[in-house]
Image 1 (cartoon, rainbow, N blue to C red):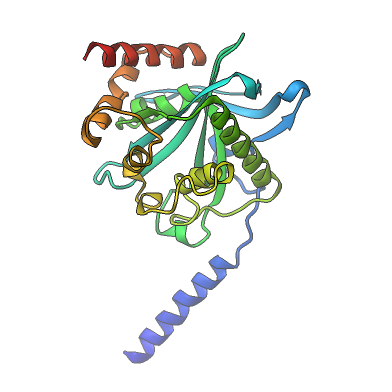
Image 2 (cartoon, rainbow, N blue to C red):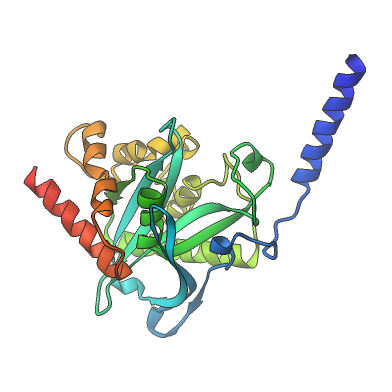
Length: 282
C-alpha cells in the first residue's frame, strides 16, 4: 500500500511538473470564438486601430451572428467605463467580470474587454486546471452586445452593470493601459491562472498600472462574484443605499431580454436609456 501511494504521488508530481514546464503559445487550434489574437495599431491623431473586434450576438439557442471586423477607436472620445459582474450559478461568490468603454463623438460606439482562459477546440474550462498552465490568457475585445447577450440570453445568467466613477481623463489612462497590455500579450503570450491572472485581477492590474495602489489586493481578486462590493467600498461605484440595494438596481438581465438584436452601438445606447429611466422613476 505504501508503495502504491509513493508511485501515485510521483505520477501526480510528474504530471504537475510537465504542465508547469509548458510554454505559452498563440498557434494552438483554438475555439473559433477565441481564435484571433487582438492587437492595436497606432494611427494618426492618436487613433488606435483594433484588429479584430468580435461581433457575435446571441439568443437562447446560441449565436445568431458570428462576425469579426476591424474598428478605429479615438481615446479623446472616451466618456465612460462600465464594470460588469456575472455571478456563477450555485455560488455567487465567484463569477466573471469585464469592462465596457463608451465612446461619444461623430460615431458613438461601445466596446468591451473580457479577460479569459483561451480554450482549444473541444476544451472545457476548469478552475482547478487553471492553476496549472492549462490555458493561455486572452484579452478578448468585442462589441458589448456580443458578451451581454451571451450571458443574459444564451446562458440565462444575471448580469450587474455599474458605471465607474472616474473622470474622462482617468478613463483614457485606464484605456491606454488596456491597449498596452493587449499588445504585450499579442507579442508575448502568457498563461491564465485561476488565482493570479484571472478575469478580475487582470483588470485590476491594468487600473493599478494607470493609478498605482488604486485597487490593493483583496480576496475579491480571487472570489470575483462580489468584486462589485469591493469597488463600491473603494469609491469606484457610486450608489445610494447599501450594497444589496445598489446591486439590485444594477441587474440588467430583464432589460436585455426585451431588446431585439440590432446594431450593436444602438443596442448599447438603448439598454442604458431604459435603465436610466427605470432608476429615475424609483
